[in-house]
View 1 (cartoon, each protein chain N blue to C red):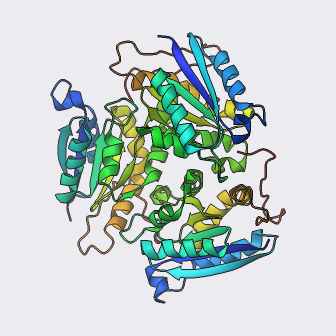
View 2: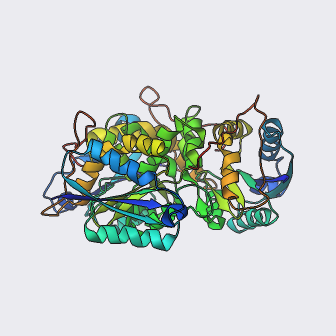
View 3: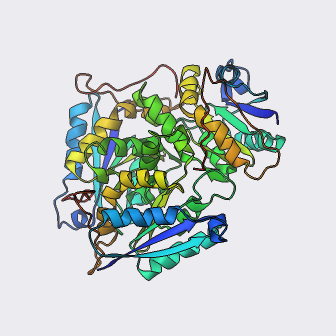
Length: 181
Length: 181
Length: 181
């Protein structure tokens, strides 16, 4: 099955056109670089509003996206609510993603601990929060992407026609162990 | 006081006998290897059902177990609900256990971030989620067991006849600092 | 604006005078050592009671403190409830602080995983739980303080007269990146 992947930019300024979104294009470029299997992007830009973010994630999951990647809104500023919106619509949280991304970002900046990035499962989709800056986006995706294809396999346990993401092995090896985690 | 330790296997297949439980025996063997103080196992196998897992944990805690170790059901598959059941019955969560186990497993497989293992306190018992595979069980127990005897001491602060776990020092040194954490 | 910083000691024994508080003075000394900008301490000692801890944090935030540091009550003992009180009054949690402090403490003692320290935002204040022992307090502050001034900047996004903490660069460099996290 074709993999539908949603890229959700969360930004007050970008949503009203006051600022060109840099995070969304950086994610699209990254996915084009690492994915070998056919996939199609779904994209949206929403303001830093819990209801708007939650509704966008749920709509992408309902449309059949297997992966929903957000960018922006994960810091401690008053308008940053992407993790709260993610938690609101996910039935299961995946704490290992946020831990790992903070740990890797920590090698670059001591303020990595300020990121509240999380991940979880909404319907048949893995939802992963990424930072807003393109450089940090790449560092985070490099850290967690090798585990994403197998995570999507597991989310679709029992699905007769599951999505299946394959990576370009020369760029990134997606790890699929024989046994379950 | 004799240490009662519960080993709870969480698996749909093992609970209906369609599959020989490998996790439970691996945990029992590990405990026999590291513990020097007298202890007695309590064992059960339940399906991947929040209610059944939660009830089993509560029953073991009510029986006086000081440690309840689960195996299985911590991944992102639809039936994996062991962390949710654990959180449901615990009055306090211990986030450091999951963080540490994922961190150590990360040295072996990039999919370690997919584990949602957690730990918490239910009555007088420390509850710790472990993975399903015997090899990963040992890696996780090696990572967190040195802190478990002291954790049980602290949970039983004020208990006139607390359980006390001692390890075989040649195999594992259980750390008991002088001051509280 | 002058930085008001609250130091909240959580301890049954210290609150009834049965024990001289060592954590509070260790934090005050640390802050005097690293901060270059003008600041004023606010201090209180409360028992290990969720309501008392929560009320003290909220009162300090209402008074205009930009940083509220607690000491004590973060372990697994029955009376340890500082993280629960923190979570109760915070509108946003900052998981990276606890992760980082446990990770750094892990280099000193295997029982570091028993700490349930967390951090979050209450009004205009960053609330950070620290351990009770002076030595561990310093290790934890060294690990997270470089990110605290910028965190407070972000919490006060949109505030026309925000507090601003500056550190003594020869002792500690507070990291302020150009872009947001």
